[in-house]
Length: 219
Image (cartoon, rainbow, N blue to C red):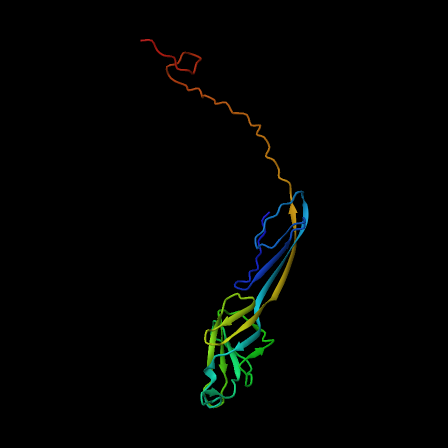
């Protein structure tokens, strides 16, 4: 017997949990099962639609692009001070989220960011915040779609770190019904007898008396 799940999460990760009532289960969207005996069986489906959530951002180090402005001048070839780090997370539609800023450090960790990544693709750009001069761009990382777990990055300019992305259920639906199984009925044998063909009698003018069948005439 074929079953079909009608709820689809689209681009969001979706899982299915079928219970066919006959001891069988499945995690497929369109599973097939067999019922060995006629009867009524309880069938249930739990559909869970999840979402990828950016939970933490760890910046281990940054490029030296922050050095040399008014806030962090370079004196005799040496940088003074340290950057005030923050990031901007941008989704596929151009919407952005800006984090809080750190203070005088070349590394920074943001915990409990809790940003749902439901409009990919995403990019995360790191900056040094400056009060007077323009903020310094420290590099951009394009987050791979459907990333899960710890996602390391190294931008090649000295900026590196990792993202923590969790798969979190955002919606769950349970459907229950009853399925009836019936035995197959065999087709009855045909008892129809063939109908004999009847040949109609044809009256004619050249027949002998009392007969309707033409008799050949003798010349």
